[in-house]
Image (cartoon, rainbow, N blue to C red; front, side, top):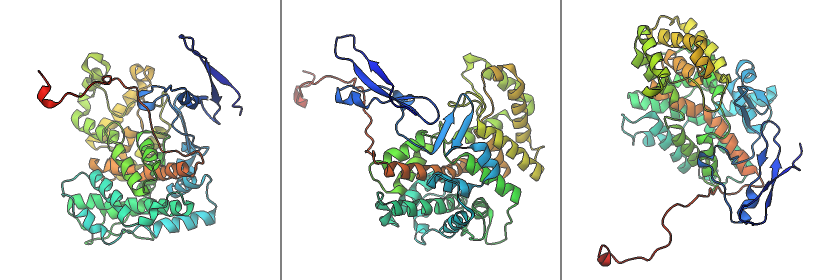
Length: 433
């Protein structure tokens, strides 16, 4: 790579021009380094940071035009089909796939630290039973800061590693207990003998009254969903984690901040919206009416789970989860379920209809993940908590990468001020006179 290219910024008012470095990337577009502008008292305006690289990262890469997502150089397809979530977590954290010995040790560390402090029961019981599970996850995750004060040593690599392991181990327990609490059911403790996804399903569905056996096909399907959601470049929640972490905040607070960002319906709530749409359609016979509304621009209506802001081609994660969805439906013999019949017919139309093909409105990962979750007996309110569970892997990797960067600085976005100019303060008794 060569970073010798420059771009010149010229001014129409006669001020001297400014040369800005052009930086190459190992993959993807060149980046203009605008940092020299600050010394000249000039800032760039980029609402939503859609054209701004807020950091340098070696974790994930997306090519929306080609429909490519990779982690540390490995395509998401290879990881989903050939790996498992524990390996992907290790890869995101440490930069390389583990050896057999490293994987065994890492999996042991995560499995054997999945219990929550006994006093965490009291934190859960401070919430209303009717609370959304994400509200509980955000509160409980943030509260863990009080149980692990040593995690504040964020600039110590070993402390960061311990915090990363704790978060990966305990967030599934937090998510499962949030579900149990809202249902009024007893908390189920994690089982060290079970795998990561298997253990989560056990904690969600088991009760003290009867045993619960997790079918391997279903555990593998959930593990694959975890992989597909593990990281996704500098999205809203990941950027939130980085910004919160840039101040040196405890990692539990940073993860809670990421969860709060993810909870938004424009981010992590999309798969929940898919299920609501399927419920609204209600019958396969009504699909043509909804398709017609989606094609009519004057209605403002759009089908949920189709197209993607980043991917202008097929979402590579959707290809994987589509196959997974059909595996789950076959295993559970649920192809005749009314909502699944609606989903399958919508999928068929989207893949064959010229309108959807021309506009590249392919079914995305949210469309299929909602279907899989419902088949696994997971209610819509738990979709975003499970998303947060999976994305914790990417969040802790991004957080640790940022703090280990020698160029690390506290985040401080600038603004274009458009308010009043300086004016004289008028005492209240003289105002309006």
